[in-house]
Length: 370
Ligand code: CP3
Image 1: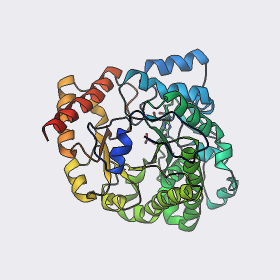
Image 2: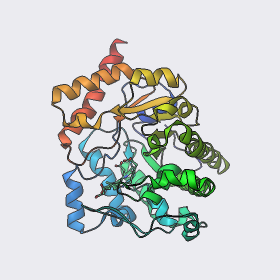
Image 3: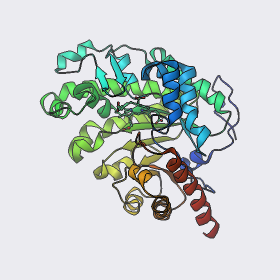
Image 4: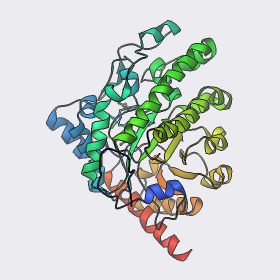
């Protein structure tokens, strides 16, 4: 197995490339599995680490040795087929000049929100994301070395619309749909902001691959709020641009492009467009039927998802039955098992283990008889 030959760093050879094969549509002997938000508050060792070092969330994100440690915590417990770098989508608004903190019990705190088009002047449009987010790049390089080829490492970013939504509405649920109101009242300023976010995200993702990320995911967690028409105008073009320009820029730098995953939560109406948007994998939330998704996306992209995160609260039998049924519906090829959204913070880690092991066991069984 080779790694991209032109990267300046030489990384250990990859021992488990299941997820990369599933993303590229190559045969897999068992279904790869990872979980969105697999690192974090549901793991007691995460809380212990935070308490022991007396650090806040972004301090951990900004300290590569800490981000590396937190990334690896779930990998030590579970037989996962991918790691995802410990960071947050909000680092992009931060480098554009917004002060953002995440405080246990208080949620996300912004020092200011965008209220009117003139507020765009407050953003640092010339921010150099690869320099300003060098700590993410360093965390990726360190984690890739420390993983020692155990499995691929995901890099990630938020989609422009989802970032715009946070920058206008803030972290808590805004009583008025202010970000969607911008789209109607200030359509041009909205596009200026979305273009800026898109441009910075491309540079950021390219930087992450150069630093060692082997697969990328773009999170459009707020996509579903847009509805079909607004999604076509204010999210899809930017998602597409990110996929095409990231791959193009990597090739220009003679770095082999990596598979890209798009997660547009609740955007059922756009499944066919997402399947033709330049991404290798479309990640699904739990409210969509696997058989329907397979029919709509066709054979040229892979699917990821989509177990209801609340099944991690269910009794063992029910969880296992649902995993088996999900595997049968998606099939074991061109498929990456995951939840339909992140792990909730009060989930019992033993149930995460059951989920991961059940995916491996049942998919091997199904492959053996087919
Ligand atoms: O394990 C992983 O998945 C990697 C790390 C990761 C985090 N956030 C860590 C985190 C990833 C991929 C994200 C993405 C992210 N961040 C998204 C997209 C995915 C999704 O869940 O829809 C979004 C919308 C965010 C913004 C964000 N960051 C929210 C809404 C929150 C929760 C705020 C709260 O207090 O409830 C965060 C904080 C956050 N990001 C935590 C973690 C582990 C919890 C921080 C803590 O208190 O320790």
